[in-house]
Image (cartoon, rainbow, N blue to C red; front, side, top):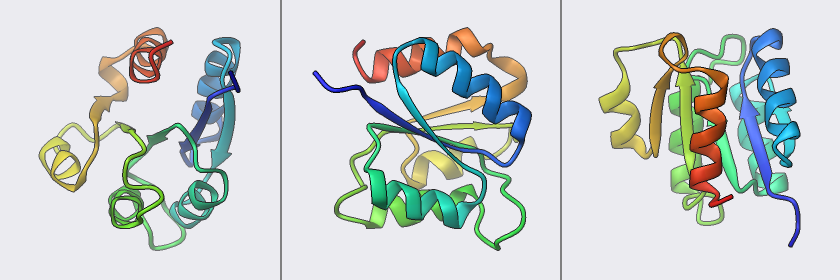
Length: 124
């Protein structure tokens, strides 16, 4: 069986590094994107098995909601599970309406819990 691919769309380099290291140690191939536009482009290119998505993505005029909307409108990407992992604790309803499978607030969840949820989603 081939290695499952996870795309992390996150602008904070430290957060990227922490999740990259943890999920790589769990046996996943992890690809990083720092902006919304890069996230959509990369998702189309690699077709990940799961996406971890931040909502606040400054710089390109495309936030996490925009990424999620783009993915859910794309025939090749719409069924990819998306875990929103953000500092915003007030946007869960919106994210789930757009199509997020899970909404996790960074301050309320440990890296091990995120890895557990990824494993559960990918049935590892």
